[in-house]
Length: 329
Image 1 (cartoon, rainbow, N blue to C red):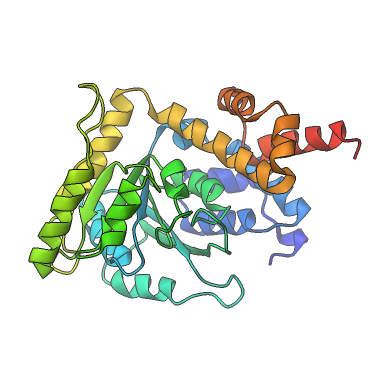
Image 2: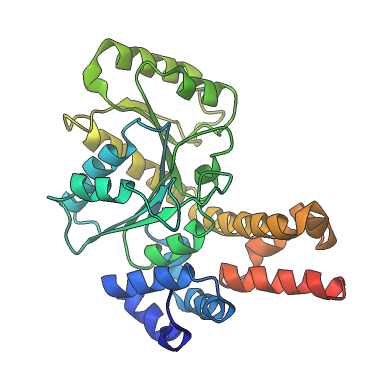
């Protein structure tokens, strides 16, 4: 952990992050991961200083999720190759099921997969989920904002989908669900409504043949036609990260959803809602349902937060202090 005297100046750091300085991005993410009060104040200033047009209207924030062992990391590596060929800067937030003390092997695996493709336009940050329900670390949203200020593509790769590991669909512009051939769990998650229907469905390991084709057919059967012509039509695709097939089409489909969001005028509003939901979740974890109700209720809080400007840390601390003041603490 950084000593307080070495904490970076937030304004200078924000400028360097916006200039796509990799070392500055790393320092900014370290600052966001520092839980001490002084560091939190510096982090709030950092987020407040980053350019709002990039945080809420630029780049593409993508979530990649699916069952453990489905090949998310290899698919990530294949997508990175495509994006770099297209001249895009790529930042990856890889959430590991590892101890924040001992670390995990997954980052090493990812680096090996990308060993021939890493350059100064690709940045990987691995962080532990730390037992957080929802499958994502609490730091993912503020870290995503930092990375949106520096990269064209920000990819959040999750631990894996379970009954509560669905937060990626509430924190990313485009959610891509990766299914495993001959695995009924993926289909059951979708049918049971455990996670909202993602924006893109893809069966990895298409090279296994019949099992992959059967799973793709089952996925397509879960999809309903859009209720209106202007609604997004979820594509169901097949790909093989090992063989390198279907990756271009997958990248195109992910980009098509970003284009659709922009055309519908939904991108900025969606990201502001993500931030509002992130703040409400943090408040609920600290003060429970009673705390949310005492602050006006979830619906009112959501509406107010969507309209507000400011960093998520500033908004969270303001509401937290309001609750404590009302309670006479």
